[in-house]
Image 1 (cartoon, rainbow, N blue to C red):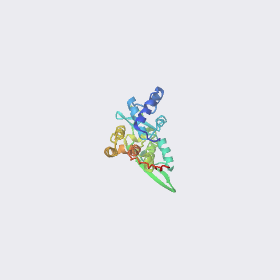
Image 2 (cartoon, rainbow, N blue to C red; image 1 turned 90 degrees about the vertical axis):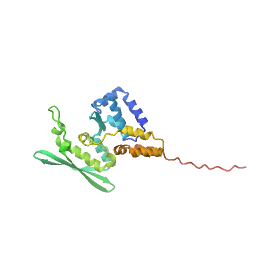
Image 3 (cartoon, rainbow, N blue to C red; image 1 turned 90 degrees about the horizontal axis):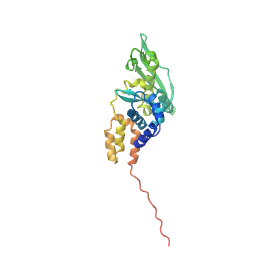
Image 4 (cartoon, one colour; image 1 turned 120 degrees about the vertical axis):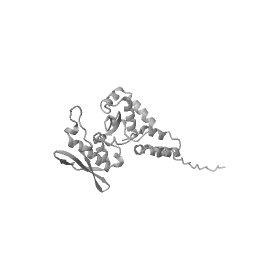
Length: 246
């Protein structure tokens, strides 16, 4: 992910990229299926505020899925694995399944992360019934045809978040969003970011920040740090005056 930029720069970048009809149509067919034009802009801005680049959307490292008339941003498991490797993930144990009467009850995945010379194990167990999604119109879903693969992906994502909380705490894969993201209250991240950028003093900034929901604070941490630098007092430089020579 690239460094966060200002909202004005993000808006300009999004408008510039989406002005190309070919690029826009590609995004509609791949990254934003079922999302309308205005929501596409909003979703890209939200993703870029979280540190993703426009290229990440094109490569589908992050994408949007329709949800309750709006959208939810999700990341791919491959992207999460790449972030994990950069953060010290050095291995993963094979998924362990608990089954009864031919049905999956739960799946457990353990990942290993190396910090300095220490290798820690992070284990996540998830229950199939909490994530299973049935097919529609008589057609089976992937949860019906590939149940082991689907639940293992959810368990691995849980384990990666446990091992790399700073890097992946706000990242979810599509397979788990039906429950995990649905349970979260809806927060307009862009509006929260605009409120922060509109502050004129350090006192106002602190007041606005304290009123933001926890989810917004988690996603706007980089923006907060950048704005705090803006309000730091500028140290005056001492100028040495040379004595006049006669």
